[in-house]
Each structure stands twice: as C-alpha cells, then as structure tokens.
Length: 221
Image (cartoon, rainbow, N blue to C red; front, side, top):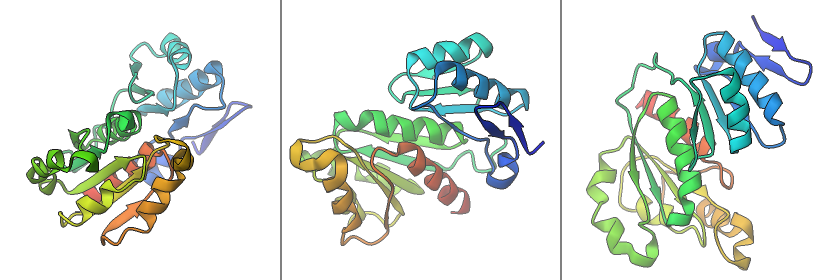
C-alpha cells in the first residue's frame, strides 16, 4: 500500500522501502488526535513509530490507541517499538553537547539514532568554556564511527572537535544563548564557516535530522 488517506494526512507506508525506516511524525502544528491517528496508521502496517517534538498531551492521545507507546521526556519523542532489522546495530554514534541546556536537542538525536538501531555514546557538557572536560574524554570520541556535536551560544565546539578526530562530524546549532545568538543563527553561521574539515551542519535544533544523517554514515562506514 503506497499511502493511507486519513483526510487530514496521507500516511506514507511506502517509505520503509525507499528510505529504510517508516515515516516519522513531526508533532508541532498537529493536534493530539491527529498525531494519534497517524501513529495508529503506521503501527497497523507493522512498522515502528517515532514522533518528534511531542508534548505529553500528544503522548497520552497516542497511548490510548497504542498501549506500548513510550514517552522520552527529555527528547520530546514518542516511540512504539524500535527498528530491529538494521544490519549495523553495533555502529557507534557519539553525541556530544557543549552545555546542559543543549540536552533536549541532543536527546532528540540520541533517541532517534537508537530507534534506528544504532549504539549511542553520550558525552554531555564538555564545551569550550572548560575545554579540559573535552580533552579528558577525547579517546571515547575517537572510537566512534560518526559524531554529532550539539552547541548553542557561539557554536565553537564542532570546530574544536573537528581538529582532534578523524571521523565525520554532524554539527547541530541550538537556539540556546543570549540576544546576539539570534535564536541559534550565530551558532549556525559559526559551524558553517568552520575551518576544521569534515564537518556538515544541519538546521537549528534539528537533532532528528542529524541522527538520520549519522545513521546513514554509520551504515556505510
């Protein structure tokens, strides 16, 4: 079945064939009822469910229809099961944050990567304001196949790590910061203008997008 027409949404059941995993529900802008009906549609096809940017109201609506639904509060993600037919389940994706305030975006990336069948290494609060915290853990990062580096403020951490490791880095700017941070724009521009080679950049607060790119890289590594 190519898709299921729910009236308010056309659920893409063909996506696992094209992309390797089911359609993911972006919850912002959707009502809890709409989210629950889309989730149920995906689950009826035997697919695992992932819903991002979800609040507790959305989770409770999904839980009524899918009893095994789980809410990851820090990540703001709803999951039902986990993809189990991924070949490289031992692939190691390291997720690093500059500060504790970056955790929601980092956890979105972590939960997404785990949902897709990857092993995740977390290293939080090792930003450039206390660079010794990063240097003390650099050997952990060098063991990963790919790194996701999440930072707000000026967004310098991916450049620093890029000069220390020989692995691909996906930089994620966050909206964390004071006024001149421009809700993540300053971090985004810093990351895009990095002089360290091997860094790719996703959109502001896009932990999900970073995890998907890391997943594809890890599968090919």
